[in-house]
Amino acid sequence: MTKQLLPTSFFVVLFGINLWGSPTNNDIEIFFDKDQHNAFISVVSKGDANKEIKNIEAMSLVPIALGVKDNIDVEGFPTTAGSLALQNNRPIKSAHLTKRLRSGGYYIVGKTNLSEWANFRSTHSVSGWSSLGGQTVNPYGVNRNPCGSSSGSAVAVAAGLVGVAIGTETNGSISCPASVNGVVGIKPTVGLVSRSGIIPISHSQDTAGPMGTNVKDAARLLSYMAGFDPGDPATAKIPKNMRLNFSTNLSKTNLKGKTIGLMSASSNEPEENRLIIKAKTILIAAGARVIMLAAKQDYPGEEEYFVLLYEFREGINKYLSTHPNQLKNLKELIDFNIKNKKTVLAHFDQDIFLLSEQTKGQKEKYLDALKITKAVSTEHLDNLLNTNELDAIVGLTMGPAWEIDYEGGDQAAAKNQLSWGMGGYAAMAGYPHITIPLGFVQGLPVGLSFISTAWQDKKIIEMAYAFEQANNP
Image 1 (cartoon, rainbow, N blue to C red):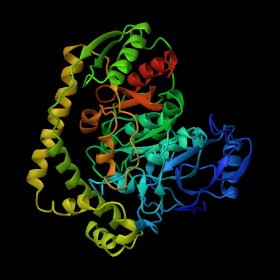
Image 2: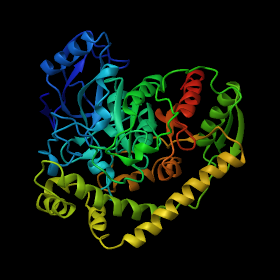
Image 3: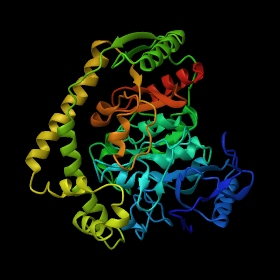
Image 4: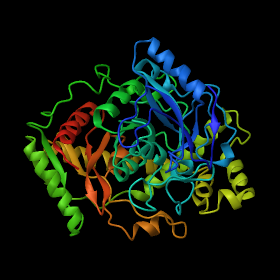
């Protein structure tokens, strides 16, 4: 499969495009200026797309266009993490999660842009920006941030360029962009989807997951991504009796008789309270019993941060050493960025890279931090679920999108926007988390999260589907 690398262009191969609905695949046309929000970083050629569609149709399947985040290896495309440093990183094989996609009718139309290095290069970053792909923009509002790091995947779906896409998450990188761009995002239990062939941050928390226009489409894609991979030990933990067809038995009645823990407002902000009341009303109308939960404040952020710093250095060194790229370790990446600082470091620094490189010889500190991170997150969620006999914990995913601000970065911009959120504990614990569109604030989308314990992915998908059917965002 040939590729076309278009770091600054608004050219993309689209397929029977319907910008505000689900794409069809009847005809292939080349559209200019349709990727107005810069969702894609590279695309297939028209000829290769035609070939893929014909192959899938020959299998008596309906072809489904798919975007894949550009930190996932796909043969024929460079895997860049949005960085100029990896523009020639051409994997010799695709990531394990792609193996069954064609059997589901999926064909990859291109790689989606992302927050450079999956938002793990700088604490002053601007989500959706990468030195290779430029700035991905939220299709809602003006100059609004798409969040990240799966920015392009979320925007590609939100803008109607594709009906489904694949993102990745360590902590918030699927749920946040899904929420602020008004699409569905599923962060599976860590281990449900193989991480082989994905540029890593943390083997403790990393996972790929589907994003889509609706729950059923995202759940179907997950069915073709999930499964055992001998190259990823985490997948060996998938329960033997776990069925991996996540789009079956989806019903409007899936919330009936369920007990839901709904997170209370974290402030007196009227919009936050309005959305929580809306969620509660819909849950009760759908037959669920709702218990209000108080927000927990003692988040082990420092410990989690050190875990990610330590695991990133080890993981990226291993990835680079096994891929056909000139740079072979984190130190060489740091040096490359310094040499190319006018472009790569144009908007923010690489303080996370520098801190990660300094974790050498600190394994004992890492193990202590990992133990605390896992214990606090799992105990918190399990305690809420078990004590209250809950089927799921539900709450507002994120506040609405903030403005793109290259001067102060996301942290400064977010201070000027309404802010709330959940999902951090699920990320640290490796538990499943699905976010779906709930409503709008200031004309900007806000999502609702469903979270449960490990391997309850199907259960929360079913409940999210029932809510989706009852909701009118």
